[in-house]
Image 1 (tube, rainbow, N blue to C red):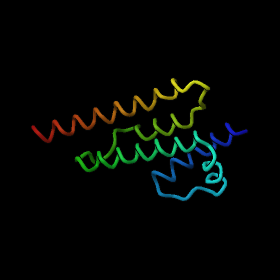
Image 2: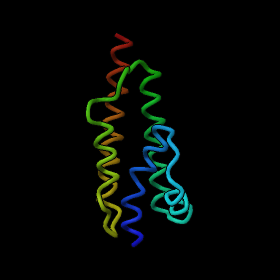
Image 3: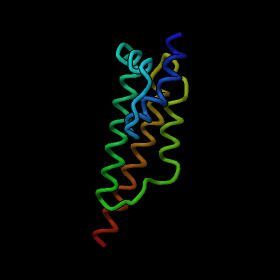
Length: 109
């Protein structure tokens, strides 16, 4: 049952962090006692912070599909092993790092 609640909660948690919308009460109650959903919120905050940093260095928008890949990675059901779940976040981090490098090189040229 908890896995299903987590799967339903995660997109709402991410939306609340990135868009500032308040999630429903049942999501807040679930998140208060679910470590996986608390970790989802922390990852969404980090992603949001990275996206805002991209704007501050001159990148007007994130690369196409970045937000969709982050949300789809969060929507994907997790197995007991955390290694496969770490792969989308590694890919997102690598993509963000590449964009930052490109933007900085353009500014110095």
